Length: 481
Figure 1: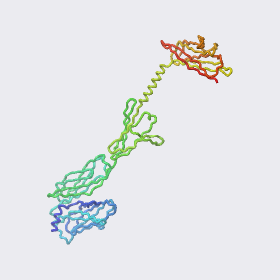
Figure 2: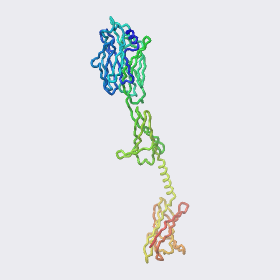
Figure 3: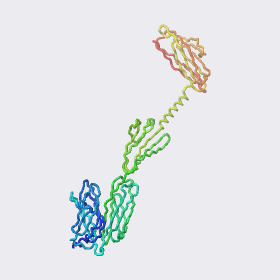
Figure 4: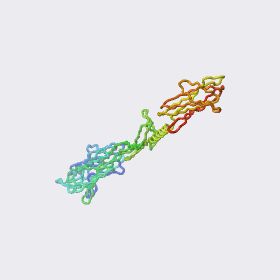
């Protein structure tokens, strides 16, 4: 009855696969090296155990009473596994002499007991006992597998996955489903495997270019349907890493129009992770009145030079934009207005300048007795001015000295008025461009002048085209205390 029970269990417990305890920190797998033996021989399997525990773990290895189990080396029967490492050993199994083991296929359980926690992990292997002539009547699938993938993967490049399959018994497998699965990709395929055939298959797949840096595990599962039964083989997960790449790339885009610029600083995150970046621009004091930014910058000094800077964090696959606006139109407009006003001033200003000054030449009894008066006339235009007539008034408190110095312009008419005083007139028929004339005369006071007094303005008329224009000099003030 025991043999019948084992044969029934073989359809569910087969080949090489791994059983995981709930919430276990250990992964185990067994591959068959030699699983077809005579009753006086030992089957040979390779046990692999991976521990993610933070301490050294010890596992006691044993099997059911019908079988004899040993390890190579012998001390591995109490197997020590160091933290975050993988350990392999060879397991040897043979039927016990006292057990009644007949030729056929057997599901043999191999137990790994954690001596610290008491946790037991069970692995199942298929063992074929041959009879006379080395023949086993019924074969179950027994597949040895290996999965290879690069330790570091650039997500921008295709991922290459290679699997090695070895049929370990004389059974033709007409259809076998292949599942290669990780958190980031899944590969499915179907293949055949002839008796004792070895086959190598390579697959290529692609993940998102923006996949961030992380560690991942990929696992191979084989599924075989045979006589309405499904057999599965699971490999130990293989660890690989998605690497980081890229940085932030600056791009400057300038849009020009008349006396205006729009400068766009485009910050592109070409990496597969969020990037912290700082845009720096040299601060130009001459541009400050004419430029502004869409986002207020901070200021800092580097080696004595002032810079604007904008710290920013740019998510994966996104951009950030900072815009500078430069506008010289207000400056040019202001300059044009000032130029226009200047031209208007030049166009409408008097081409003749007239200025009147006086100097005290003598005093009497503490008061002013005599003064010299000078009138300066200048043509400040590049054109000649004709028919200039100059008129000045002398107050009644003064008497005009009619002796004029040599070299000065003499008056052509002197008139006396009872109320207005003395009126003196000069004439200049033609004043050349930028020519200057000087008129001087002396005044003697009739009284001692103490206190403040003023001399009247000088008036000047001249011909401008068909019009006669008049201008006046400044008013001269003087005081005597």
